[in-house]
Image (cartoon, rainbow, N blue to C red; front, side, top):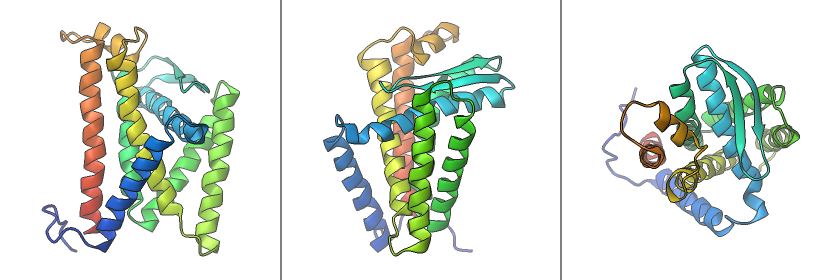
Length: 235
């Protein structure tokens, strides 16, 4: 078994360069198309992962999820009962950043990209049955079909793009998570935001903006960590 190349000696080899260049190109494409309708489905899948992270935190702390909604205006809500509230609240922003990191890392190998695609499809099937609005149901159906078609093309044709699709979703999710934290919690103070609610129940003297900065830094660490660990995997 080869020890991980944590020091990134002899970086960067062909696969590492391709990884960095692809992330750079995807980032430029995302920024160029940021305010266009073309990115709306991918923004909504990030909102979905945000709300799904709330739900997972609720389930893990023995709570009950009564429903999930994702709205066309890029908002969403998760209806929960019980669970540990101070763990459920930050799970949305931090969870979506974490999933973005995992998707970026999964894209480095075909096997892990297949696993990521399968897990994404499975989660969308599960959430379809607890979705409380048709925007989320339509998003689930759309991405089940989209990822499924890409996977079939990967296995049956010479169009080998599954890894790139998983990487694009991961990069999009990571960038949108950081932007969402800045837009919702730092640049404008939304009093109903997760950070404001968290500040109300947290005994430390931080307001919602301060928690937004902290969560933003953690999300940026996830984004940077995904690139570093990706280079380690490919070394």
